[in-house]
Image (cartoon, rainbow, N blue to C red; front, top):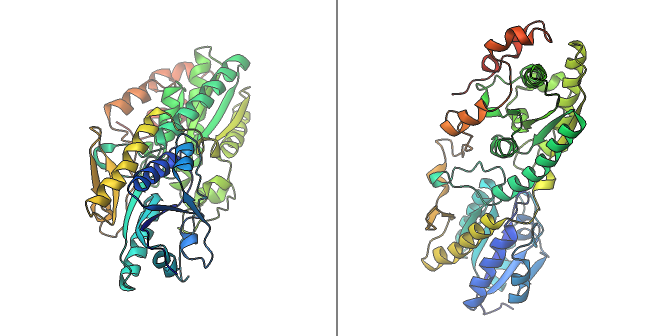
Length: 408
């Protein structure tokens, strides 16, 4: 027997990002205030295709308690439906009027397909998506950040500053890697905030021209440059996106076998990128007979479930309120966005998809003045350093930053 009281369903897809609970809390409070039942579905889309979905019904007390917590009160999943049968009774029995999805572009497109299928079954519901990723690579209007990015960056900066202090105190080097499937926003933000002497992101290279040798030579470049200035420590940051953009032939050299998620993306989290690059660096330093101690540091899952900082608490509150605003205006099948003036607007997938229906990731603009100033602040070998650098390496030009990367 169905429930006459109207309701909404909230699901979370993909990986965690600081601020998810803030969005859930705000959406729940807004709809509870308007007389709706608010249902949270565990395990993302998997719950919609289950005969016995795990449902959390929200009341004000729970919604209010989770607002500033890290992680997600709803269990997340990367499940992507294939031939599974949708549980249409879930929507009918609970008198569902809105599906709120929180996740990346894959989650958004899946939500659209589900509501389209339901419409064919004469079940009419709205769907509004809240874009989320710590990678900051969704092309939102006005280059506004995705929620969770600034909180993850803040946590990364905390770890980065501690690591840099260890390097200075111990007079050694650390090779650090940060998340970012194809864009280097997180690595760029952490490295520039911590004044690391070397930063390596995929956007620095011409397409298809990232090699293991180039990355290692950049690491040697910063070590030698600092050594020539009698600075024997530092942290070099590498974005995991260099693996995502590296030709398979390069990966085959070190025997990396990636597993892939339901959306076809390589699961970079299963491989310790910092350990790989640190190992390759140590081999190179041994060849060059340079006595330098290096250690790996991986910034991965530590960043995803931290407490959201004030910026994201504000942004997520605005996005949650925006869901209610768009729903009340009868708008559906879109993402909710907020600009720097705090104005809410819908963004449709068709607005940001290319001719093939794919969403191109928003990359770090390495040609911007901001990026160029940050790159100039790094330590690396240039042509004017060749004489000094030749005391440590036979061919300084091989480690020339400007010959290895393409920026500016």
